[in-house]
Amino acid sequence: MNKIIRGRNIDTIFVLIVFSIFAFSVLMVLMLGASVYRNINDISREGQREHTALSYIWTKTKNYDDAGSITVGDFNGIPTLFIYEQIGETKFRTAIYNYDGWLCELYSKADLDFSPGAGDRIIQIESLGFREVGGSIIEVSVDNKKLFLSPRSGAGIS
Image (cartoon, rainbow, N blue to C red; front, top):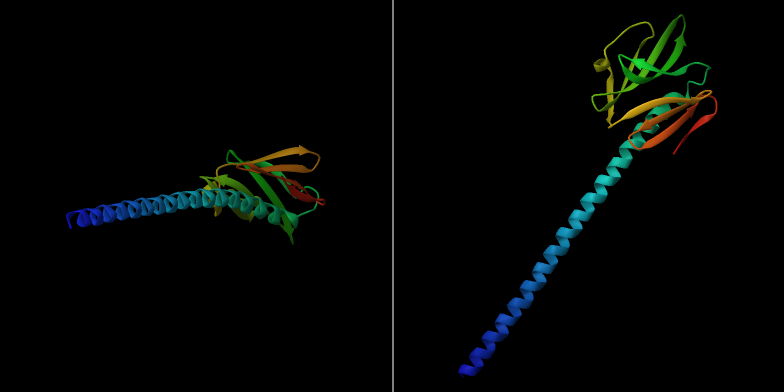
């Protein structure tokens, strides 16, 4: 009878060890899956933010295709894309720039001065740059993505 009890104890211990190994394996797979999901989600969110910022800038500029209505300049030392429009006798200006880690927009009369902090925050970004490439083509870069604007001929994202 002692041998039967010992055999059952060994069987019970073996089953508990196998169950423990299985439970540990399941836990490790779940933790690994959560980590992979978190990384994929972070990468997706980053790319979406860049694309959203570029789409916003493209949408703001596509309706202003008059010659000279879109220019690159400087707004209190910050590289800025300016969009000008004439409404009646008054000239207005939209300034798009990066301030304090945010894509900002400021709409005002063209002859008024404001501080960059007065603009509306649109979306968080790391970097924003504007460069006239040639002719009327303007290169817009948000973090690692680029947009080429050309009034009257559309735009393309690379």
